[in-house]
Image 1 (cartoon, rainbow, N blue to C red):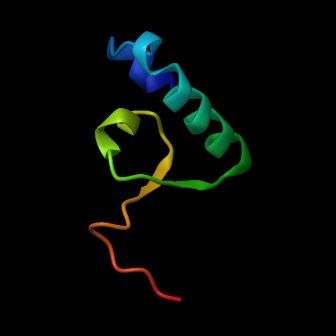
Image 2: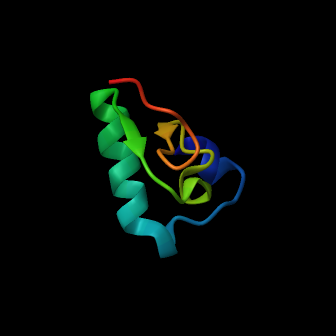
Length: 56
């Protein structure tokens, strides 16, 4: 999240996304999301199930 602030990318309009990213970072989890651009520069690991194959 600090990288996002440092680059001047606002978090105001994306507060729910910022809260999800913070919770995932705090618990060392990845976020499964289709809209990856909302989470860029947050430091959270992302998984896009529409573009990546998942092994079960």
